[in-house]
Image (cartoon, rainbow, N blue to C red; front, side, top):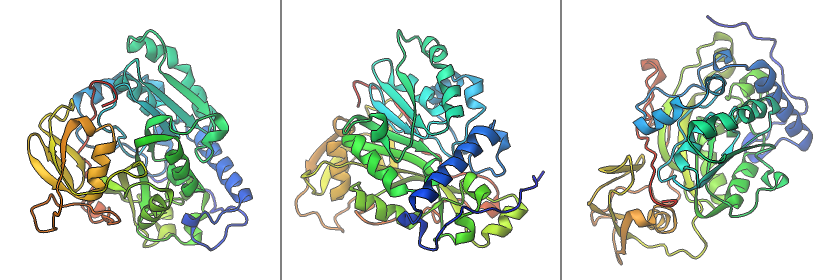
Length: 395
């Protein structure tokens, strides 16, 4: 049943320049933050309150140990879930993880079980009501997981200004985010801050909503569309530009799924614009890291991915199989928490025709719309490659 919308409204002072270039001034950014806080703090009390199915977990197979962790999360926390993907990368035990826009804490609590008592998960959110719900269940989950002390913390603050809440440089192994960056009026600032707090070799692993074009002003400044995750959706190509400017490796697509806008009024507003929910991983490759094609052999030591590791949409590593990867993928594997999961040897003089694994070469963008399902064929998300692990140390 379609809900009736309030009259279309926009934020004062919005400009015509591309949103992705942080065209909103300070006053407009503050107003957007306040509107989003009101939307998710006062209007959205549970997942079912959303007008669209954008922020609903994709229907896909989930590893049993992840299912078990999710089952242990308190129902009041899960009832206020507004994510659009499953942000569970591999090799998490003992890791320090930061969740940008942690909401009521579902992803944080799930990951706090996976990192174990020696790991730590910190969630930051600007919506006080969400933070209050999350904090309410810290002791519950500590006891549920059998930990002697909490390994999770929730902070009230802005994901564009992590330094304001005391998050230091080079502090985290992994930064995650689940359908939140689209709500930020300054996406380059979000990625800059994520890069800053990550350790060398660290990873940003996140799900978000992307558009197939630069969105028109009417869409970008519509309060309901912004609150539902569409108005602030980044043109997917711009993600690659921002990542490069910040210093990250090229974004690697994990999975993607288009979705229908099943609301007549909103559908008329967005016109021909299309949207996709996509999960990407970015890496902070240390300065000066060698860039050379390499032979790599996966040793099968990642729990949950013993026989194969689906690293991204173009790279699947089978246990014991030696393949050649391009310069950037080799640098990622050598400098990240995956280093001891592979045998890596340089391959001087490798050519594009020498049998390498089909690479996502540096700077090459995989179109998420071409890799996702067609919503006209029904709601059947294509994201099926998900595994998380428990291993020795922070993998």
